[in-house]
Length: 383
Image (spheres, rainbow, N blue to C red):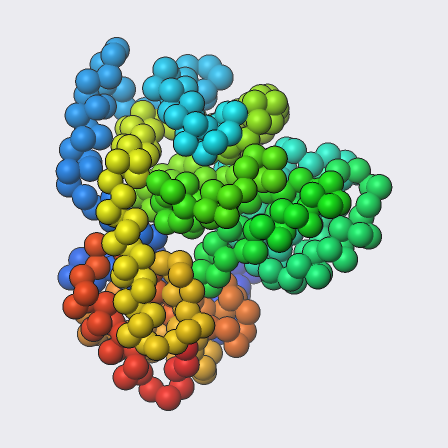
């Protein structure tokens, strides 16, 4: 090999292959029913939706612009982006919003920028990899508490009193299991100890709350209780990008100090218009959200399992490790349903599963067929 370091890369990939969890890029088979994507409302594939986006893009004052041409602070800003941020802030019930090119960039920006040296980060054990990476870049001390465990959170809050600002980091709906954080109790706990609650609503907006405003809104929590939320547009919004919503002071601080905002090319206008279109549909067409929850209810009724959650992410646990989970997914794919396995090390050993994503666009027949196929999997599979 040309470089000695390549031997270690080759060995790591060979070990992944031997363990049965080597990642490879594949395209989704078009003939299968999509039960694996995060397109919960079906906007990503709706022809009328995207025709409206294209029409708005072509009619923008100043003419069509594909690439943003630079960062927001140089040549990449545009009146539409600033108008969209104002709309998002109003929709979220906050003072201001700041757009990012992805949820990953937004989460890294928040945790790498806001907590300072001497502060403390208390993170739920199941937070997304992007939040973990942001926490690692922070100058604050970081600790993790047991998933959704209020007692464990309070114990850590008691220990960290008087050591700078404490930030508590959770997701409203967790991406791997689809379970929900007890946000009202967490907000009350943070208020008792003066902690700053940060909530990633990536898998919640468009799904929960009035006009899809998320679980924070559904639980009746305002900006005082949850001063910072990350809203991601690659799931129910059917698009790409994210924003941070909160106080004007916090947004101004991120604009000046968040490296993932400052040193990157701005979001292209076509993407921003897609976000604006989704916002409009959520505000004026509640049937998408209603149909999604009807489909979730149908799925749970068919499986007669009271432990299943109310989010579009549903988990079917598989005994037997990565290979058993992979075989279970292949069985469903052979029956015409695109369901993907979640393997270790993405989840801990022993927690391998099928991750099922329900959409507003699934028909009753498709959901019933999926449930029947799940019931027919071998005895190694449990829900």
